[in-house]
Amino acid sequence: ETGVTQTPRHLVMGMTNKKSLKCEQHLGHNAMYWYKQSAKKPLELMFVYNFKEQTENNSVPSRFSPECPNSSHLFLHLHTLQPEDSALYLCASSQASSTGVYGYTFGSGTRLTVV
Amino acid sequence: LAKTTQPISMDSYEGQEVNITCSHNNIATNDYITWYQQFPSQGPRFIIQGYKTKVTNEVASLFIPADRKSSTLSLPRVSLSDTAVYYCLVGDQNNFNKFYFGSGTKLNVKP
Image 1 (cartoon, rainbow over the protein chains, first blue to last red):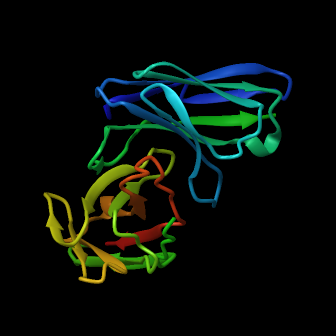
Image 2 (spheres, chains in turn yellow, green):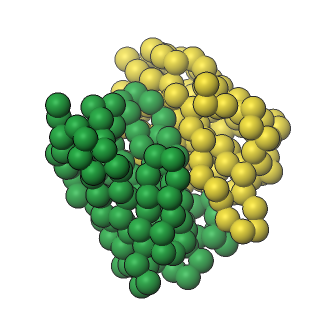
């Protein structure tokens, strides 16, 4: 148990579907992140939430919509995805302070397949 | 943002010490250096973090020279279970959310 839980672990969806990925952290951290990891590519930072406020959106297409209702929960809402969006989606959290970030804790990810 | 460069892959044998070097020539004054380990279909796992000189914990050591333009992750006596991808990240302390992953180093430990 890493302290960051992601559900579902696997998801297959059609291009016209709407689904949501969920992330929950039990570590008392104040920052949460979404990363995308495609095959043979580096992890791509998608969104950053710091104290529930979105502070980063790395030019992610609008078919990906994040939501952070509180500092413990993070969602990624998906709609009208493309097959190239198939990837491992990873959630992470960290405790950010004025002296730096002491490492991320990642969840196990959601393996998404768009058909 | 400081870019990092690592070897794409490395081979080792069980029981050996493995050193993985990361170059970060444009590291800024406030940047920390952090290393992660990732197994297939899992999220990366924090290994160690440092700013300068040497840091050691129960699983690894991190060596950072005075100019901080590179760093070396040292794994003592590796086992087959250490086969994974290892990432070096450099992050801005004042912009502390911006840690970007590079391609990492695929370590293959052989029996």
